[in-house]
Every structure is written in structure tokens, then in C-alpha cells.
Length: 152
Image 1 (tube, rainbow, N blue to C red):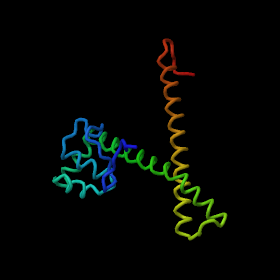
Image 2: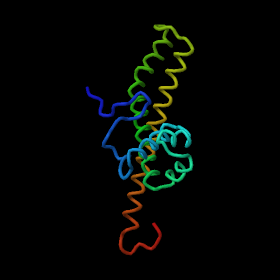
Image 3: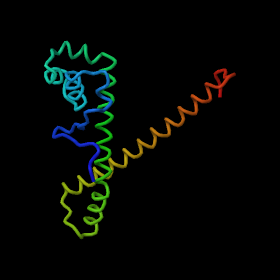
């Protein structure tokens, strides 16, 4: 199966036509990518060959801020997909170690437990976000009706 979101060695999603590039030039994309990967403002500015002062100014531009949010969302989605893919393997490993079928060294137990717990949390967060979006849609529909006077 072909991965629809190939990942570079630095963990960044490789996608030339993604939304993070809308209205943002190639140097700004370097800056956005560096910030989305958790680098400091100074490091991101260096990556884009600009001064830290320009980096602060760029970061406050609406299109840059939006691109950073998009890129971070992509990174979170990729992490969620990776954790989800590893969850069954981690759960199987925990069960095998608990039953004595596999050696239960503390590092492996901790890693498996972290994958299962964090994947579960991400699923719960996704469900909450989905429910919140549905509620917001319902509120928008209700408040846009003729005669709405500010109450439910």
C-alpha cells in the first residue's frame, strides 16, 4: 500500500500541494515547517535565512499563523495515525508479556503502555472534537433561523 503522506527524516509530512503553502512563499514555508516541528523562533528564522526580528514579524502575519496551525494539525494527524497503527501491536505485546509468553523488560512494557494510553487519548480527543463540531453546527443552524432572539 502506498502511504498517502510520506514523512521526511525530520518527521515533516512531504506534500508539495498541501494547504500549509496557501499564500506562503517557499522561504516562509521553511519558517513554518521549522516552527511546526517545535524549533525555536531563532532556529526557524535561521532555517528561512532571515533575522529573528523578521521571524517575529512573519509569525504575526495571518497567513503564516494559519500555515503554522495547518502544519501542526498535519503533524498531529500523522502522529495519531502512527500511534493507531502501533496500538494493536503494543496491546498484543503487553498481553504476551503479562501472560509470560514474552520477556517483560521494563523499557518494552513502558513503551507498549505509552502507545496504548496515548492512542486511546487521541481517539477520545477526536471524538470530543467531532461532538463539539456537531454542537457548533447545531447552534449555528439554530441561531441563523429567522426570529432568533438570543435564547434556546
